[in-house]
Image 1 (cartoon, rainbow, N blue to C red):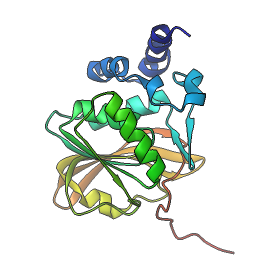
Image 2: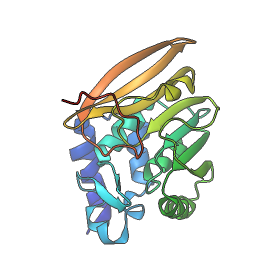
Image 3: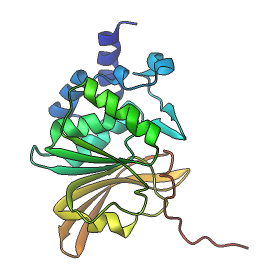
Length: 216
């Protein structure tokens, strides 16, 4: 495989047509080498328009979803970011390149360890990896940006409360087949603005809050 041609095709044929036009994000996709974050037996799928299984029920998002999510957060070099679900570390790396600090929480220790190796290979040292169940929030700190890498049937209030005023939260909310990617911005102490971005279906966060469901 010609890796650079495959990378170019991914950006031009999958990502740009999905309204990812931020030059910082597009340039980053050339630098953070996706093929080095996928499992060894999936190298041939690194640039494909498909999810890639990581084991333990986790998977890497399609490249276009990763790129669109990163663009939506509009990260600044001073931002402190929380990521829920480290996975392979690829999305973590994209976030880290655009921000000051990333705290990434992964429920599966084996995935966190693999992500640490991947990030070290890319000399990314502004990431703190933690292992734990963050489906209901994580700690007490406030963040400029929060990324949920698994879907949630209902968005836990805790994440909204962990945003600084002006902070942005990317989350995919709902049940299959009707999930919506949302960008929630904290506009004041008790006010939030929600923007609907696109429809998709991704695996849920483990132990995600479930809504009350009618039982007949």
